[in-house]
Length: 329
Ligand code: SF4
Picture: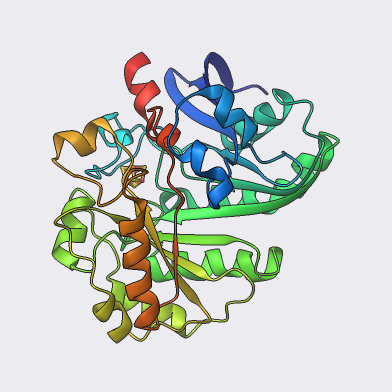
């Protein structure tokens, strides 16, 4: 049964944002190609919004394809940096509604038949921890969905969460970790990307950034995951790096992060309507990328495993999570 209906498609140089009507509510999903920005030869793409230059630096679908789907109608939280926060929250999507987004992304891209890495984020609209059972069932079903569409895909599911202390379904944050790690280790042989949004090493600031959400503390997260079996992909602690927001590598070091289980990711702040209204400013962007590299170096010297997100001007071009739904809702 078809439960979502295509309303609009928007085009970026690297992909598309689809808007679907789901029982009168507009939800978003995306398909993008990776833009190579990491080495010197990609310098020109870091500083442009010219599509003809961006096209030259797109990674082939066969190497990597990036998908995101929504897991809820809106989100119960009001994170200061995210435009989904401004939308009304109307509850969880069903398994079928999530699967239909994935099937539509494949049907709308019929020329991608083989890919060594299809990274799918359950993180367009919604907090997936609140829809845990449905999201994890969909993740387990991905190989069947793609082979049913005649695709030969190597999936890398990505579960990105702020780790609420208690979910709508009644799971504690620790139970969410247990269930995600169970699918990671047992269904995906460790190749599931578990990303936890952290954003500050100050707990009060974290809570403010998450719009007052009750989340597990960094201390609880690190202590609990340190005690778990983690193979292949390490768990990522995401920090959007912003001016005047505490990010102290010594505090992280003192939490006793197990380097075999965690990596810290430093991410520039995307320009969103909400982040501007809340006066949040990115610490670095494509113009002063070296600031982020210097910060990375400090983490490395302290012995904290760290990666930095690539930065390109085109990624600031709008169409962040929730922006289109907000315009058309
Ligand atoms: S960042 Fe995630 S949890 Fe926060 S409002 Fe946006 S979708 Fe919800």
